[in-house]
Length: 358
Ligand SMILES: Cc1ncc(COP(=O)(O)O)c(C=O)c1O
Image (cartoon, rainbow, N blue to C red):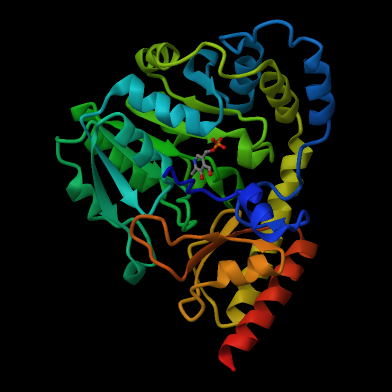
């Protein structure tokens, strides 16, 4: 039977608990919710929905080009970053690809669908799930595609741009495509130390994946994009699926969201403060955390492998990471939310951990 493997499944959780008021810590979404004006932009867009959407997302890519300081022709928009992941595989048909483990599940799902051979670089608990120098040794000329999630999901560990540049130097002579998923980069402190966006002009085998989902809290609207100077890949991405995957609603919502710079500044400030608060409180509870440099916290609670179920019974949904390749029961991920929600989670955790240690 098909198994849904991601966070954010409030629907199953509601069915299981009969609780319509669950607090969802399982999806890593900007805690401020939809940016100001987006709801109104969506309502206005409804009036245009008797037309097909612009297949080239002209107005949106123009706004994105200004926002990201790249050329408009270096942007391709899709129905969420996930859709672009599948299109990238269809567009480039890699025979063999290299992934981190654990990492976001859809890279492997897409590669499996495309019939690629997939190999993994293990991120281990002994090294706090960090990507290490010896990754470079794996980059022989057999790979057509390498995927790095930065910051990585679920660990929240980051790679410095200088290291990724070394990866890129190894990939370039062989024309290996390097996909760097920066969907959570907006929530990292000092993103300029980690983002490789400045390298797209000099390396046309580099693709950077980004999403409105997390940054602008609009997973239900579905909007993501890729940045690359590889015009051939962009052409192939267009050819690899329907022309209208970005709805009029998503295009208008995106254009409106990009103007909300104050919203984003406040969100980053809030995430920074609340992430620190959660990390300190979890430490106080004796919970071992790793990485956690973005808007989510990755931790181990080996003494309580059913923590997700116990929290669900208390109306709180968290992400068990047991189904990530390379992880097992006892690893969990929580989103950084508002102080109020974080306090509710911590109170429930305290209760559970007290009962467990009795
Ligand atoms: C690292 C990473 N990339 C991409 C995605 C997909 O994002 P979207 O909702 O835009 O498809 C996710 C979703 O969880 C993710 O964690």
